[in-house]
Each structure stands twice: as structure tokens, then as C-alpha cells.
Length: 106
Image 1 (tube, rainbow, N blue to C red):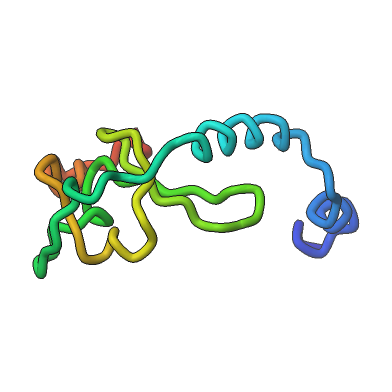
Image 2 (image 1 turned 45 degrees about the horizontal axis):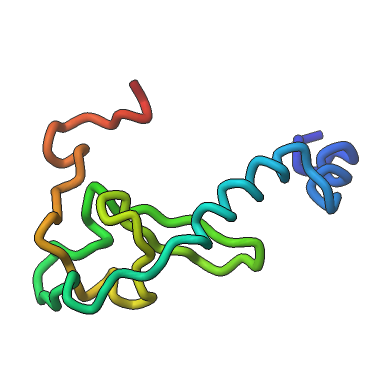
């Protein structure tokens, strides 16, 4: 019997309360307090150098399962859709492409 079919896993996954819920509420609270980037920061581009391919790009979801796009350098939220067609002057290549290793594995 696999873990996905076990009654324990099913009860835990369908439960409304999880032990990590308090931690995620603190993270979501911090993300929701951020403001969106100002209009002059992001510039439209037709290259692959967009926010989504930047080292500083991050995403998460809020309490309502909506995607939150953010930039660690500016400490601001990125408007939906702009992460695919825009970049800022501080764009940086992903570390995995630059160095050739993945820090999460190390």
C-alpha cells in the first residue's frame, strides 16, 4: 500500500488544520504588506531577460491560493503578466546558469 492510499495520509491531507499553518500565515502577512513596483522601474523587453528568468524573482501564494510574484532586490510585488514581458536594470542571470550548480542541492 503506497503512502497516497494510506488512511493516515488521506486524513492528514484532507484536514483543515496543519502544523505549518501558523508559519505560512506569518509569511503571507509579510508578502501582502508589500506594495507593487512603481511604473518606471520595469521596462518592456522582447528578449529572454525578463523578471521570470532573474535571480531575484520569487513567487508564492496567498491565503486565497492566488499567485504572488515578487522581487527580492526591490522588495516589491510584480504586477501579474509583467514578469513575462518586462525587466529592470538590476536583472541578473540565474545562479544555476551562471556558475553551473544548484545551491538547493549542496
